[in-house]
Length: 167
Image 1 (cartoon, rainbow, N blue to C red):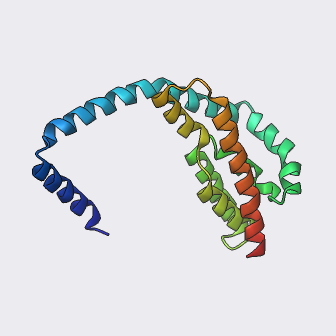
Image 2 (cartoon, rainbow, N blue to C red):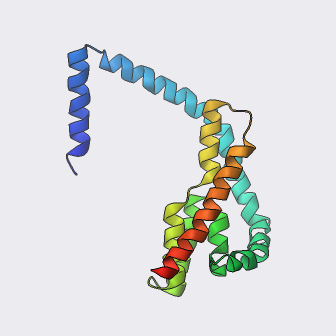
C-alpha cells in the first residue's frame, strides 16, 4: 500500500509527458479553481456548523432524543442510540465522541455497541455533504434530496440493527 500514491503520481507524470499536457499549468488552474470553490463554500459551511451548535446547545437535541427514543425502540433500534442517530447527520466528530462514550459505557462486544459501530460506519454527515454539494451545483430544490437521504439513513439504521441482532 505504501507504493500506491507514488505509483499514481508517476503514472500521471508519464501520461502528461506522453500526451504533452502542460502539467504545471494544469495543476495551477486546478488550484485556482479549488480556491474559488472553497471560498464560495465557506458561508454555507459556517451556517451548518452554527446550526449544529445551536441544535446541541439549545436543548433541541436532548428533547428530540427523548421524544424519538420510543419510536426508534419500536423499530428495533436500541433507545440508547437515538442520540447517535440524531447527531450523525450533523457532525462526524460529535457522533464519533458519542460513539466512544457508548463503547466505554456498554463495552465493545455488546449489542448496543455493535449497532452503534455499524450505524456510525454506514451513515454520513448528511447536512455537511449537502452543503458541499449544493454550494457547487446551485440547485434550487434542496429539500427533496435531503428528505430522501434522511429516509435512506433511517431505513439503513433499522436494517443494520436488525442484522446486528441476527448475527
